[in-house]
Length: 227
Image 1 (cartoon, rainbow, N blue to C red):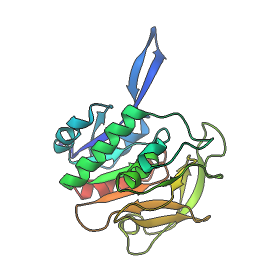
Image 2 (cartoon, rainbow, N blue to C red; image 1 turned 60 degrees about the vertical axis):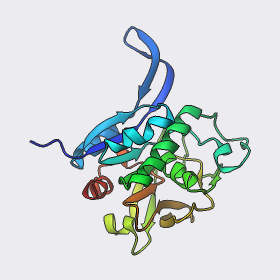
Image 3 (cartoon, rainbow, N blue to C red; image 1 turned 30 degrees about the vertical axis):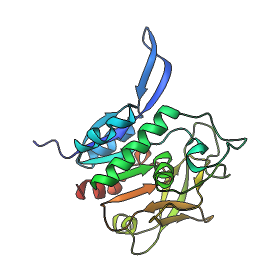
Image 4 (cartoon, rainbow, N blue to C red; image 1 turned 135 degrees about the vertical axis):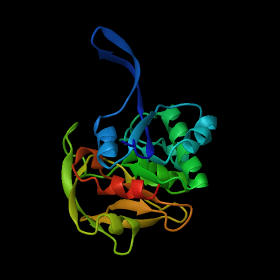
């Protein structure tokens, strides 16, 4: 039995996590991410925050890369001041994940950004973010759902050609698109829900929702097919 392509997934870094008799700093990831990779036919490898200068070496060992969801991107990365509802910075994670994204783009490694990961992809290519929108995270700690519609002819449309209802939990969104990026799905309120980089360097897609919280493996299957 083959293990399938090796798909790296970035992780959270949290201080003082308690489990059993322990309370220690931890790197962690919701189990839905590796489950989705396995279901799509890949082998998951977790990538905790590290020195940005080793990102290229890490990506060189991967067949594909997923940048996971998480805290707000620090606005300094897109030339803005923090808004009143922007969360505290995760500077080590920002630096690491931006370096991973740039390394994946440089090497043409298939890349999927999820929620924060989509926003970081946009920022890595010079785009900006809306620091707060309403209606996409109704109850703290509870995923909502809303429909997203693909843009015909896009990479996302090729993977998921129909309108679907998706699990959502975010309060920031893409504003100005980064260089070369195009929108590939929208919510009913006009929010950009997916972005992609057509053509070379390779399969590059970001989605604003959380496919790891659903049972549809098509996005990850499309990434794995591109490895």
